[in-house]
Image 1 (spheres, chains in turn red, yellow):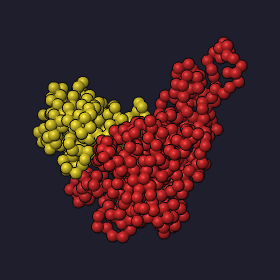
Image 2: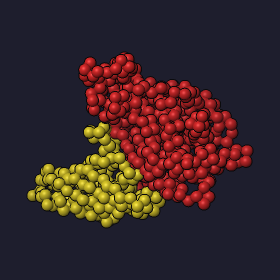
Image 3: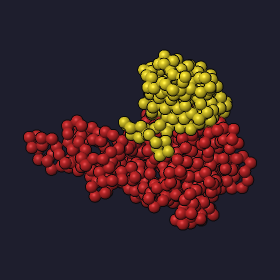
Image 4: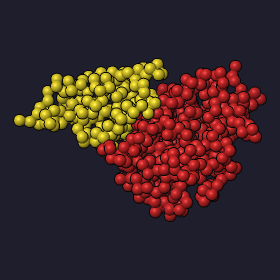
Length: 450
Length: 166
């Protein structure tokens, strides 16, 4: 019997209580509901428009457990389809990306054009098909909803969802700032990095928004940055972390904060400022011209943006785009890329890549200290003497409804905001994840019972 | 008289590097590298193509100079990296060693590797495999690594990969 998800989030704002039951990270029934009602039941991030720039370009991706094929047709329109032949179900595209006017299913040679239309059923006339078959559509199944915002592609396998604009809500304002959003758009640096960890997908969801762990989980990385700054190390790889006070425990005043948006999206940020080692420094003038001075300052801040449930964009010394792909309650696949402004200079691109590798890669010096901690949490979650986790309480008295002067300056409209000094490390932004999680799960369970 | 390297000397050299990594003798491992050594493990551009230009394409690891490796060793020993302690038990198996060039104080050696790891914390064993290309330079009377290029073939990384496990 499946646990009722409604009982797993203890959300009592009037009493100052928000707790999460450990079962949400490990229960197989909960995982199945998440796949059906969150990942396959609403908007998910699928990729970037720049992954298929030319007519007939395609790439393959995933929505929950469902393989997806994104194609740009001959007229230049992007479309999203289930990557599965309507005949027997085989995947019609076999590779991560490519260019093809026609995709031929490898199993029985049914063929499809780049608009998803069926262009051939092998030996159709000899097939003695009934009229009912001849009259039905044999194209690839199109996703009920598919849309683009600022080069980011989203789709929904469920028909009954809000518009993409409504889904993104106020969080869209922060997609406007990703790597400065130059006129040429955003792109992925060649070289995707994929890793797995043996823990629940929501540990990654939370960690991206977790300012509290940084000095605890990454002191070795911080020390290396200090070594490099002092010249103890001959390494050429430098980082804007050198110049940031955001992680310094004795920094004074507002050093960052968080915003919560509708539908579970959150942003947490830290003050960094314009520094010469930021790869966008060369473009600071153009960025100010496009986004204004306040927008420029935001673009040079450290920002971790989560578009619930599967897109995270982390920008600091470099810039990472992550797709969270749950595999099982205790196993997650992460597809990660360095996201960059199209058309940046060779020197800036090199700087962006070098700063990326040491910090973001699973082969680097920071991410493994996160993923190993997730696995430790996952094992620890077996302890159910007290099932309620206490990691959602920091900042409970610091938040306010709506935005603040910093969001007002860029016309952003969060539902809730927190301004933080270096030690506040708000945990209430996770409430936004779990309120949306509970809402989607309850709606799904209700629909199943009806 | 300039230094030349034979295949059996090249094999001995690669086996020594593997043993130093496996046994945690990382100061001796670092000493095998020249000051300006390039250490690189590129990411894959697609299923069949490796990234080739480290300045426009991503690497899993790229250091231009031994200092980057010194940082890695510092971190692994710092006691401040949960991923690095307890250190997984590793063994490198080196094979298919070919001497591409070995005259005039410069040698190029191709080989294959498999690294088996056991992570006690997760009670999990896995392996990495791929190809090495070592560029060796004879300096101060001994051969040192001026460039190491690692092609990791199973590049879906299970949680952690570090210098000692490739």
